[in-house]
Amino acid sequence: MLLWKNIMKNNIALAGCGSWGKNLARNLSQIKVLNTVCDADPKVLDLVRKTYSVKVTISYSDLISDPDIKGIVIATPTHTHYSLARLALLAGKNVYVEKPLARGYLQAQELNHLAGVKNLILMVGHLLVYHPAVNCLRELIFKGELGEVRFLNSDRRNFNQQARRDNNVIWDLAPHDISMMSYILGLEPSGIVNACGWSTNSDGVIDVAHLDLNFPGDVPAHIHNSWIDPQKQVLLTVNGSKKTAVLNDSRIQNKLELYSIEQDGTVKVESTSYSEEEPLRLECEHFVHCIESGEAPRSDGTSGYQVVKILEEAEQKMHVESKPVLARFV
Image (cartoon, rainbow, N blue to C red; front, side, top):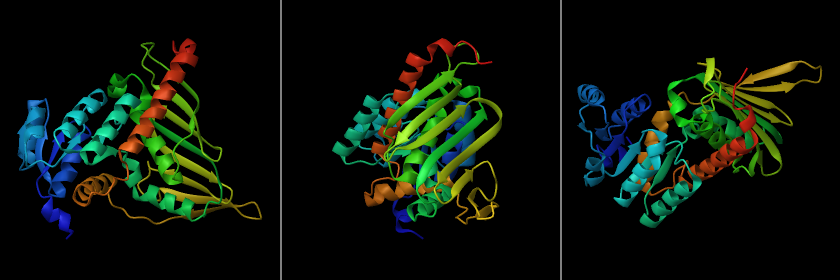
């Protein structure tokens, strides 16, 4: 058993135990570090109390004032991330905040700076950088298995009307795409080339979006996000000069495959092997490990800031360039 599993026992708090927070609660409990759960809904807390042997509270101040709590995981609505993370850092707590880190790059920059000044861990829930298949793909790229990377395309679509409170689908879905692309390339995007979006309900909420990015070395990338597709799609394609990698996270098995064209024109398909461990479990373990070791998280405040900066740039471009087509998507 890892040493930190003994040292860190029962000293992580969870703020927000809703649709995603309940998955965090399960994993934090399984690795025996969950101390307290905070949620505004008493019914949620009743369920937590019956499921786990932990403290519950409706008051966030209870978390930041408890000296036994060394880290706080924040899984609340996105517009609260900045304020809650800031309060936790000021109180001397290590923080793991779900994506996006904040709703503006200046806020994200402030949180990253504050964590550095206070010598605290600030980790962002860029889940896919902990996904075994994504890490396998990163290794293949770094080994040159695909050859020179020429183009990336990420298609992330689902049917989610509840998420419309975010006002723009990119704040909900694109953090996964941007952080994943940056991670497998080992590069941050140079910037947004183009961005467009549509509001299908004519309410100003952009629920379909397309982003074009550029990475150093003039490597183009495209992202398609949607909240209105009943058939879920989670597909990343990386075109290389030797092979093309396709990561289909909607599959149960064989998520990652490599495609190449033989001399006779036939298409060769290769399956790859990777760990079957749950990405969220690995992410939770990584947060605990970083608190104990002082190691910078794989998805640290800097990467969180970079993603927010790209999202804000994309949203501004949408409102400036795409406003005339926001009325109706046909």
